[in-house]
Amino acid sequence: MGKVLVLVGLVITALGLLIMLGLPVGRLPGDVVIRRGSFTFYIPIVTSVLLSVLLTLVLMLLRR
Image (tube, rainbow, N blue to C red):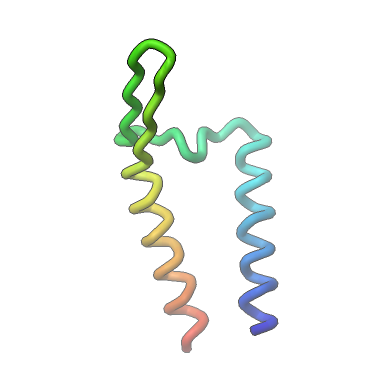
């Protein structure tokens, strides 16, 4: 359990650094944004798929 918590902390730190460097995390091409007047609806399709693949790979490596 300790290894998983350390890994989660490192991933959150890396993500924070990427955002600080200006990488558009969460606004990738393929994400859907619908704007109608003052209403905005955001569907992060590509971001969700990418996050799912990364988490799957990390968890596969931890199970070994």
